[in-house]
Image (cartoon, rainbow over all chains, first blue to last red; front, side):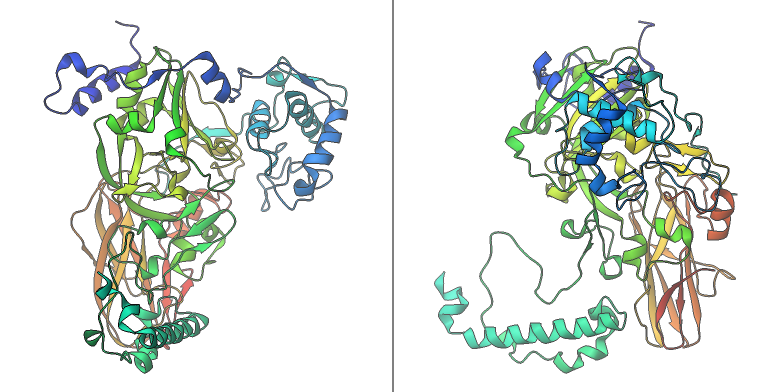
Length: 182
Length: 420
């Protein structure tokens, strides 16, 4: 049992504590509620994309195609070049994080390029989330990365290339050191 | 039964008078608001003298019939202040520690979804032995647990990083509330699926139009996270995650995923937008703190507070204190801007990760005063001054502001938000 997850041992101890009096040890492990989830069940909702690229679907996108999608679906809120708003500024701000007016954008702040695919697909555009097809998402991601000076205009973004893109602020994140106020 | 029906007793006239009274009171409350008072019933009793005596003695008129679902008195006016993305709890008008469900703050990222509980499912998958789908009926069958807990958005008081900004305590501290939450421990439900050895993080995802998603370290949330279906004794309110939400005691509100429909076990954080581009704290050196889950100890005086006006004589200073790390051990109150501190009384029971009501009797002599509260939690952590907090973190971190709040009482009794 040495392969036991450290979290599992906590779960086991807690599990024992959480068992109401009158429930036998044999019943403790499982109540038997719920139904097995099918592959189809999981596929319908399994939309997250990890930093290693797990979850990225087939498809591809280019900077050029992304410019068209962006103009049609994104520019109304984020401005023609991603800097004008009125909603979140997406482009620029690199080098500003230590100044009196930090500008947090994809280029200056976001640590992982894969998060772009995950977020744009799950939550954008605001009036029709999860409506963009993979090629559209890859293309908008490519355009945004290029606008931020992170990839060249010729680079194709797909499930292979996206996880290899290193974001400028990739090493800017640190763990929680609190309590930190003397 | 019909004898209790007001209309059958011919009380239309009484109703008309009552409505007029309501209108006048509403007008007076509105007038009070314009001079800055937000809880007219508490603050400006003199204004109400004109209508204090009802035109009809309620002891001489049969009252209203019982109803199927109650509402508050039509004379009550406390309300949330809604925007597109959030609404704020009016702590200046509340008592005790439970926030009425209808006044619990809201924060959502693309609206409140409409969810039929019979069609709602919770999926558990990823690094588990058995991927499972649970209906709401399944979840309610598990052994249940009830806890009274605060939920505080990590953006609560966030605008105060730049200096005194909010006019009222609703503005400055309205992104927090306390409810009695009932549900099933997350650990109980996860053990149905069984954890693979390399499961270290769990992704929680909502079924709202933002598909709100956060990665949570498994060991920590197995200790005390709850999958909740009830709030203050009844089903969750839609804006609080109906029919199912996570509640993680003492953690920033955003981690308590609402409208929860998916839990995925993984070997590492998923690095969603909400834990990278948002809910992270930018430091003066350009680094950013990530996964700052716990809401540290904090307190605030709720009355008298910004926008209210007090009269010379006795005033009970009342407020709330709380800590994501456990119980509140002590609250001190200062009326002289922190030069001297006195111990406040704490309302029992003092619960961990829960609002604690404190009280301090005070006679205001009509001179300018600076009111502050400072709490200490059971770990010995002392709520910092604004100067100490800013010295440690600068003013650009947006989230997790927990400094001492200062209210100035002017010679005219008017209370305003100030910086010491």
